[in-house]
Length: 209
Ligand SMILES: [Zn+2]
Image 1 (cartoon, rainbow, N blue to C red):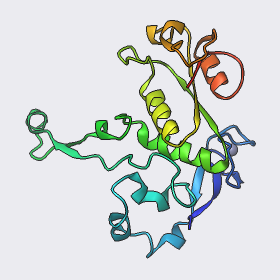
Image 2 (image 1 turned 135 degrees about the horizontal axis):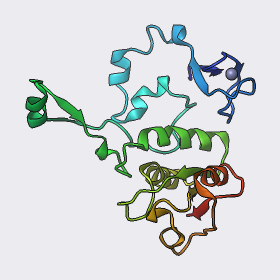
Image 3 (image 1 turned 30 degrees about the vertical axis):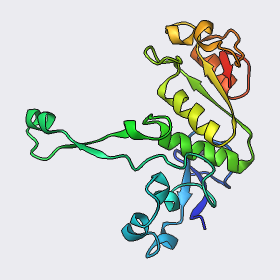
């Protein structure tokens, strides 16, 4: 059972039922998921969360997913690492750092949000998901961390992936890097174009896998 009530605009408070929209039709503000916290009382507790799976899905009652997640099954529940030397430098006696490089399968700290987003997209009935990538200068694939997580989690869920790279600015967004076998690319018009093609309109340099 989900505790989701619907979507509520963060700026003006306008409410709409759960649907694949993200911009308020009244003021163009961002929608946020509204939960029934009163109904959660006594049911969603520290103990109920601790009894859940060792992944981000132990927090499913606080996420906008109906039923079981469709992908990203192993994301989250990353370990803490004790940082003794940094702690000493900062004057902290007991400093720990959350190691989100342990997310599986993409080892990206962006995997949590991507897992929720793509799981919801599949739940809505979408068979193809897309995102805009600014590119990353040291990643072999030329994707940003978001795009890497996007590809891996979408593949796990069986969805087709579309990543739009902006043209120029970084070597990773060049057609040479994105035009590998099995992908289609086309010229773009900067970051805005990448965002438009990710949303289904023309522009950007696209790679499909
Ligand atoms: Zn609004």
